[in-house]
Structure formats: structure tokens, C-alpha cells
Length: 238
Image (cartoon, rainbow, N blue to C red):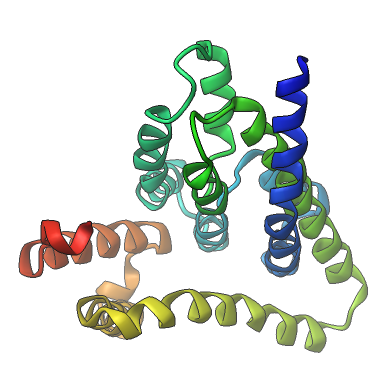
């Protein structure tokens, strides 16, 4: 590793520490939730090590708990994580043109919302080693947090585990409320999504649809409806 690559790597490690700390807290909740859905500690840790997406992993637990099919699991992950294709395409324009394909291939594994934000904000051409530095601290943070949560799930009383699992929903609320305050369309989409999800949970026939297929149908239908009814104008996207 050249001196410049080493500097980029350690800079990425330093900038990735806040991501790692946030991942520890969120993945701790995932570890607990995985144990509540009867996954083993090893299975929970393996999932976090191979699938770096909080929304995708939590959604997969719902499909697993409902004994959904592999097809439902795959489709739900594809739809939920489709945004990473756009992020990767965006970062590919910023990566140093001299970077070989295998660097781009490895970088794609570590593209998350937080790593994308830091990488996109980096000055000048993006060095693969800067992204590697972020991944070097963020991925262990996510995996270790899962491990700690799963271990806690085997030790703490069931009543405490249920209380701690509420942190997951607090996290999602913290994610959606700030942008919803600034965007009325997004706020209405969130409200409608909650209402339609409730209908699918309790209405006859609709409640027979599996959890995985429910996620797929609602995600696609509501996204398309929002895009048709209230498309984002160029000046709003800028």
C-alpha cells in the first residue's frame, strides 16, 4: 500500500467512527430481535456480516418469522435495497478513473446510506482506500453490535428484551419524522402506508397474504402512486 493509499485508508477509518458507533446501537436491537424470532447467535451475526442493510435485515426477519418463501425473501430484499444501485452508480462517477474493476467491486459491498454520504462528500476523486477505511470500522461495528444484542437476548429476561426491542421502532421514527416535517408529500405517503399496512393486517383475505409479499406489494404500489400523483420536480431535486 502506497503512502497516499495508507493516508486515505486511515482517514476513512477516522471518518467512519461515528458510523460505527451508530451501527453498534442499531445492530444491538437487531441482535435482540433476531433472537426473539428464534435465530441463533451465529445466524444473526452471519446475516449482519453478509448483508449490510438495516431495513433489509429487519424486513427479512418478518419474512422468516412468517415462514415465507425464498422468492419472497429475495424480492423483498431487491426492492428495499434497490436504492443502493443508484448510490453505487453515483459513486462510480466519482471513483478515481484509474481504479481497477476489482476495487469498484469490493467497494460496492460496503455501500450503505452513511458510507455513501461520506464518500460522496469527499473532496476530489474518491479513493477506494478511503471507502475501505470506512468499511473497516463500520462493518465490525454492525456485526459486533449484533453479536452483543444476540448474547443479551440469551441472558436478559423476556420482559426486558421486549422493552429493548422497542428501540427499533424508535429508530425508524427518528428517521422518518425530520424529512416528513419538511415534505408534505412524504408525510402523506407515510400516513397512507401505515393505514394501508393496518388494513392488510386485519382485513379478511388481505391478512392471508404473507409478510414478505405484503412488503413487496405495498412498497411497489405506494412508491408508484406517489411518483404519479406528486412527481419530484427538477428544481426540488436539485
